[in-house]
Image (cartoon, rainbow over all chains, first blue to last red):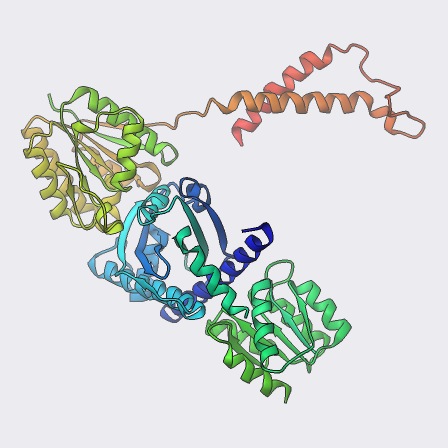
Amino acid sequence: MNPLTYMRFKDALKEIGNMGSGKASAALSRLTGKTVMLDAPNIHITSLARITRYISAPKKLIVGIFSPVDDHISGAMITAMPVESAVNLSNLVSKKKNKVLKTKDKETLLKIGQLLIKSYLQEMAHFLKLKVRHSRPKLISAFGSSIPGLMASNIKNKEVILLKIRFNIPTTEIKGDFILLLGTDNLDNLVSAIKDKLK
Amino acid sequence: MILLIDDSGFARAMIRKRLEAAGFQDFIEADNGKKALRLFKKHNPRLVLLDIVLGPPITGLDTLRQIMELDKDAKVMIVSVMEQKNIIARAKKLGAVCFVPKSGDLNDLIKAVKVALR
Amino acid sequence: MSQISLVVIPNKDYMNKVIRISRQYAAAYSSICYVNMNRTLDSLTTKLQYANIDLQKFMFVDTITRPTNPHFVELPNSIYLDDASSLTHLSAAINKTLSQGAKALIFDSISTLFIYNEIRHVSVFAQNLIGSLRKSGKSAIFTMIEDETKQDVLTGLSRYFDKVIQLKPTPNLAAIPVFFIISYLAAILALYFFDIHWNFYPGGQLFPPEKHVFEDRSIYLWGGAIGAFIGTIFLKII
């Protein structure tokens, strides 16, 4: 890819990330009844070994709703939040005041995660006219800095496309990241889908 | 003349192509709010398509507010991925004529532009 | 003799300290049960191998690999759980590994349990596990992540342990020479500008500077050194 095409490709991916997270944030907003703010997306096409520096997850415990992604594009997606954000989100949606994530809260978070991941990927798939499937999400807890490792285990390539968008719900102390990691074996499919949009 | 305001070149190109294919022509483009306001003052376009998620220096909502201050009869249509009710409501309160999601095949956008320019 | 400790580790240094603990245990015991709750097992074992720690000595109880990687390859003598929330499943897996010959336990980390369980439930879990470790004369280290640790939780749990160790972050000494050089250059530059500043006024000649404040140029040497010293401390603090 020459530099100009590369920049355009990144710009297009950014917009596609915006569309996915726009849908996901609208779904989250409907669920919580609050405005969800999104930061500008971060896009990186880099080697698997270097994604840690771009994901920059905190060195603290996080809760994530994780799902491998496959079909026309393959990789993994996670909605990751600090533990207190996950508890606050579950409490906000289920109108509770729990301090830990009990079985019901885990189910609530999984449903939220399912909705967010589905909204994000469906929008992306619909827009690009690609088939994208995701497995049933799993709720995980991990040290923030290990997110790259656990996402990378679903990628076969050494080169990856990383799309990260930060969200927050003002006044609720809920914040987190939508992170989509794809192998560069998806590049051809993505590039041709993007080109089709400009025909 | 239609003013397209979007910080993504890809999004501007895609919207423009779709609208051109539907028979619309004469576009001007801005990738930020400041440039958009300058172009608006200079050309006074018949319709503005504005993405509400706009990078610095001026946010999408601020750009909308300033356009409406320049011309209270300006036709500004929000074309955005931000589909949250309260954000759309805020944009409408500031004077946006309608909201069209920036997704899928943009057929809704073409219909809305036809109505707005009728 | 069994020694059971709780180690509170600073977030910043967490992985390094855990590796150090693992190295010490690998040197002292022939077989160790490692409860891994914070990263994929693949990532942990890579780090252990990189630190030249004999993996053969470890039997893992893992709560994170199965949900995140459907195609993972199981390590021998390891138990993979679906999630980290069930204390019952965790307890059963640990007991099974201990009964298979593990001589010691590394529990990484007890902080993770507090995401899903109330303090009293974690206390009961810890009390039971520690009881069975003592009965069988096995040593153990339970880790806690400093920023996730509330003082009342620590106080409540500490009574079950022989020792509670609060680790301090390892200072990053590698940065000091860099800070020193940057500060030294900045100090020299500041001194030089002060030295020639009269030349900026009307009538002054800048190239080459005509007037100098310092007659004795050795000030650059000791002034630079003092500046570098102060600058290094300043940079280290921020």
